[in-house]
Amino acid sequence: MATLRRAMKLPHATALVIGTIIGASIFVQPSEVTTQVHSVQAVLLVWLLSGAVTLIGALICAELASMFTRTGGVYVYLSESFHPALGFLWGWAMLLTMHSGILAAIATVFARYAGFFVPLDATGSKIVAIGVIVLLSAINYVGVQHGARVQTLFTAGKVLAVVLIVLLGFVLGGRVEQHFVGSSTVQGETLGGFLRAMVAGLFTYGGWHMVTYSSEETVEPAKTIPRALVIGTIAVTAAYMAMNAVYLYVMPLDQVAASSRVAADLADTLLGSGGAAVMSAIVMFSTFGGLTGIVLAGPRVYYAMAQDGLLFRWFGALHPRFGTPHRAIVLQAVWSSVLVATGTFRALFTRVVYTEWLFFGLLAIGLILLRRRADLTRQYTIWGYPVLPLVFAFASFAIVINTLIAEPKDAAIGLSLVLLGWPIYMLWVRRSPRDLRPLTSDL
Image 1 (tube, rainbow, N blue to C red):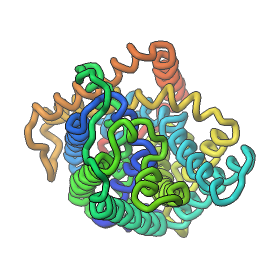
Image 2: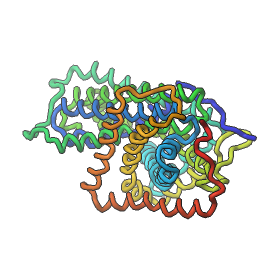
Image 3: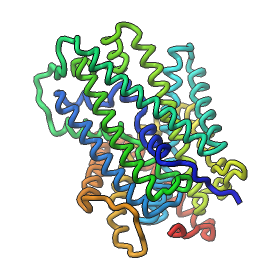
Image 4: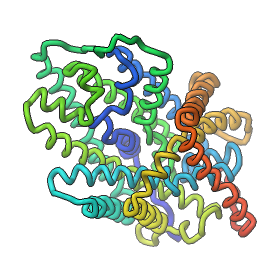
């Protein structure tokens, strides 16, 4: 009988954390942070605090990962903390658009920048985007070790690119007349602007939790995953701080805020023309690396759901030779490709993506509930308990509330799409109650 193979060690798991967080936005336009606050100090503080909140989330997942070593990550944690229905809603949202949509979106970004080197029309861009999804799915189909190695290679290259940009920026940027020039606007900082900047910053740190999805393919997951989460999150925070520091060292805040290709503008300022080519190559490299981790992670959740009887059992099969959830990988590749081909990922993803913070907040509350269970053992405990989990829950729910207030119509549609999974879950359970397996089988 085929089983998942433990091939991911600490370097691979850490690369998965770093690689899935660092995508294209830090090279193209550092989210909406620089348009919401007006001083260099405030910008850097937003990135630091966003990293700190993300680290708290990573620490929460670290403790949960040390308790539950079954593949599925957040799906398993929500099911164990509350009810299998909540875990199902997470998996439903992932498959519908939250994970599949971000896969489609990033593949489309990759294709858009490939068009700088090879002219592509709309159809050509879709073919390239679908092609990269299929390619990376094929790599992961033939073994998690192959996907993990590609992820590690591209993450190492991405980190090297960040280091080189920072070093060149501070070395060559010395000839710029003024450094760390704030906004020319006379208005001061507002609490609302700062909070909106924090929301934007937190979204840019997204993806840190995906390493938990592949627990059964990780060597000593109860130790490896917590360490990877902590090391990876701290490394990304340092990279984001350094990148934004060098941008603001070389260019005025107004220029950074107005730029849609900030890494290219930095290159133009330091090296003259050619920034567009540099940016396109960096973005393609970075998005390819990010896609590798996203393609690897998602199918493990669908596999776990099928194993629990919450998805067609057919998707819970493992390849007899490669030991991978091959049918779940194909499911993800096909659906993500459909989203690319139809362009529907934009309408779905932008409305649903904020709801992941609702689940993250519940994850923090779930950790507090699980502390009461005497039957659980853990190899890692979060420090600052229960203050830090409560702080993270507050921040997560604040993002949800802010989105509902700022974009009530789209936010309501997105939440409705997620909640649509509830009647589906009820019908599924009534259809095949005997297929449900006890979630505590890994204890």
